Length: 474
Image 1 (cartoon, rainbow, N blue to C red):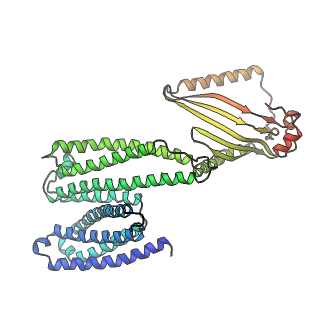
Image 2: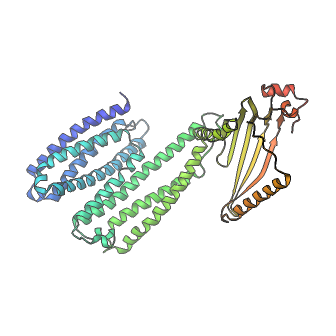
Image 3: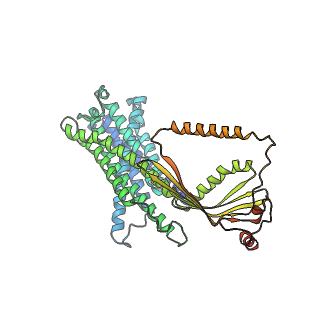
């Protein structure tokens, strides 16, 4: 069986074991627990705790089962780091499962009524434990940072909703969320505990996300450096570790802010509470802005990889094919590489019904950017292009040529319209300057010099040998 099939099979076994353990544990609790622990809220807490314990144990077994670093082959650091990861992820899963289960059990109790629901609580505990055991075991086999991050909304929403539904203050939402936790009731403790666990989980998830980013960058760099012919050999993302350090710091501060909101209630610690509560939006704004910049840097980095450049070349071919086909032409982009989007180097060939008529082995475009004043400058250089003959275009309809005066008037009108459109554009838009258009070693075939659109099409080197005397090199 493949990896996914093995994970699904092991997950089903975990489902059965956790369901049995959940049912037996809840029945023993209902039979032997003292009367003070038979209250509704405490009963739900114990049921959620059993479900969370089943899920965490299932996750630990699944995660440790696939790990190959829980030994001393590579020293003490690898197993210690793996144990830390297991403990950290267990905290995330335990928090998520406990709060989500508590919210769902409370909602089911409200719908069915306490008298009816109490008779089914063992079955509910078994069902929840089985489902959670299956999910955690399968997720442990396929673990990545996205899986961990997807858990955060569940338990945050569950904890806040549960606190809002169980509070004895029906007007808490009139002011702000902080009033929900500014008491000593069960709902306030639930709300503050949710924020503390949310901050802890943000720090833990950030650790795994940053680790994946660093590992991916190293693997891509090693993949490019495997051969001397790779155009991106030796390329490094500018200031990568500095960016990662800033991102890690902001994520850690965001997690600490959540923890601070839950730890420091407003009434006894209003200053510390306000620092954490009002400083969190500023940190989140910085994170969103920096994440956009990070996404832009990631897109630029991807465009400089062979996969990104192949995708861009295919998209350019698909975009230019229809308008060229209307004129009976076709474009072939043989090569597209360089430090995109500021430097681009490509090789292209143009064909018509008669075959190849233009070959450009190397075309280079350099883009320059200026901030003050905003502007974009372009340099275009074509190296050793070969124009074998003129293209064979579809015949145009025979129409009488307009008089020269009308033609000049039309050109003047078009220029005035273009100037009017340009003048109406906002002044903050960057200006465009074409600084240089260079042809280095332009080669013209005999068919071009004779003024005909047909000629013998041979290899460029053979054509150059035959027409060396009659073909000027510009």
